[in-house]
Image (cartoon, rainbow, N blue to C red; front, side, top):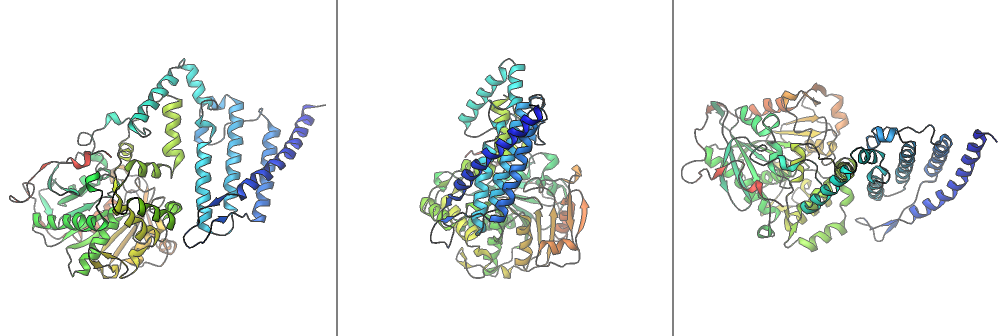
Amino acid sequence: MSSDSLWAQSAQKFQEIFGESWQRVLHAFEQIELPAVAGAEAATSIHLAPDKLQALQKQYVDEAAKLWAEGLQASQPPADKRFAGEGWASNPVAAFSAAAYLLNARTLMGLTDAIEGNQKIRAKVRFGVEQWIAAMAPSNFLAFNAEAQRKAIETKGESIAKGMANLMHDLRQGHVSMTDESLFEVGRNVATTEGAVVYENDLFQLIEYKPLTDKVYERPFVLVPPCINKFYILDLQPENSLIRYSVAQGHHTFVVSWRNPDESLAHKTWDDYVEHGVMEAIDVTRQITGASQVNALGFCVGGTILSNALGVHAARGEHPVASATFLTTLIDFTDTGILDVFISEGFVRMRELQMGNGGLMSGKDLASTFSFLRPNDLVWNYVVGNYLKGETPPPFDLLYWNSDSTNLPGPFYAWYLRNTYLENNLIKPGKLTVCGEKLDLRKLKLPVYIYGSREDHIVPINAAYANTQVLPGKKRFVMGASGHIAGVINPPAANKRMHWTRDDGKFPATLDAWLEGATEHKGSWWQDWSDWLAGHAGKQIAAPKRYGKGTKFKAIEPAPGRYVKQKA
């Protein structure tokens, strides 16, 4: 009998075996049950669309039979960076296992797409399956990773020894190393823009930055970073620092540096962060500069808190902010992207019971959650490199910042989950009471600059655009390329990526409709924003010669201050 006939018979037998396995997989998949989503009375079983199921089965059988028929002779490493390298290319068994894994992975994801009914259940199943698929990749195990095995042989076992040392190091520090953290120090080679802390309370330090120009705009500029991360994402290196850029453009710049909460702050609430955080920072800045109004910027959660502060001011008939910039900020929480898989009445209620009256949400837990939103890039990539190959990850300031996690006070966190992600109350006039005032964002008549990143998985671009439908004042919306961080930290000098603007002043109901009239520009959006901000900054005056003002607001310590150096 010829070898071709043998392979044909093998392929036929494989199809018979696979038919039985397919039925077992389907039976197991259909038995999956998830906790009831909000509004459901009972757990919901998963059902698959018959037409999609039939098409998927045929596709899988055909591709599996073809892979089996080709055998090891034709196996080449698949086009997936996890299976790149000479080790995979020179080992047909490894290449075959990678191809089989990817086929199974595609099929499992296809099964999630075939789920009928509730979209939220489909998203939850998809997220869980993605996590399982990412974890089970053959590249994650030394026994199957041909590239790691090759390196172990070439180094005579040294890579394995180094990998074990890396593993013990990461176990001691409590997180997977994404970069060589020993090469960075806050205040030495990150967060180095010159300035001083001129005010502090138990929630934040206010940093005033030294002017880089002889004259500054009369209206000072206050940046509100997210309290879920540390502010120096806006001041990593001089060449990519948004803070330094604003100072160089002639803005008298102040930045809120949130304290990393410990048990002494475990009782702090959302109202505290609004009134004794953002509103107090704005008030102190006005006292120091003598300006009646400031320009403000909020980034991510910082923008959400800023929107609340502006709402409280408006309810009180106060207008201390002349213009506001919102960078990748959620105000309308209708579309929260992948994070929606975590949100349900049951989950939020559990958090309220755990920490609604006091406690801390661990920064390490938050960081881990965000990393697993992109498991291959932010988790398993480093498991393979650090532990299986014994490599030291290269120095990267952004990933150092990403690992420098912060805690959140439990009451703040629980309020945030329920009133934004779960119930979307910020856009409901009069629904929320914040700092004793009923919020109505329709009262915010100030001009706003709204920026969203096209590939953002934290604040989806449609959600960023939705702010144009909520905020009633004169608006400018800009969309940039890339994600939540890389899209924002994109200095003009790098001349990277692109951004889109529209100058006719129209904001149709959807982003797609807005894009029909938008213009694409090469490079950073920073200059566009700087030109817009200058139009709201007033005349230029002599730059201050010293930090603070009088005896009340003296320089306490050099920037970046001690709050940002506190570890979770």
